[in-house]
Amino acid sequence: MAEKEEQPQGQKQLNIELDEQTAEGTYSNLAIINHSVSEFVVDFISVMPGRPKGKVKSRIILTPQHAKKFLKALNDNVKRFEDVHGHIKDYDQPPIPMNFGPTGEA
Image (tube, rainbow, N blue to C red; front, top):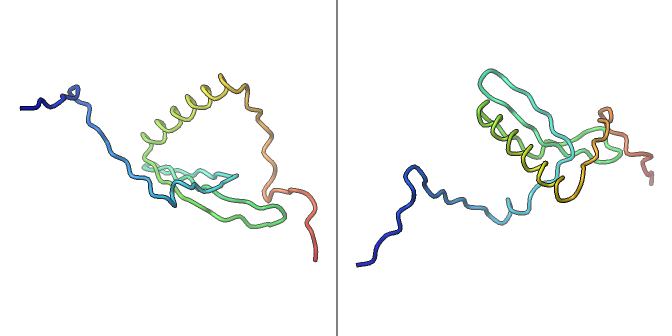
């Protein structure tokens, strides 16, 4: 009889499925965060040059506890990235709508 490998107590395996479309990702160059007593709402937006209107590409809703865990995980990953690739320069936030320069006319 084959023996089953025991996982340490309290640890369970989580299988995560990632479909092809989601794996491609969605580009965002602006995020707006709002919160209430029970949730954080993060809207990821794409703003294009010369356009006064952006489009929300994705909205993620988190509990306050998950928002804090996400903040810690993101901070840890930025630190690891900078340890390998150097400091990420922090630019001043341009006013909304963003001005990417002159727009073309036909």
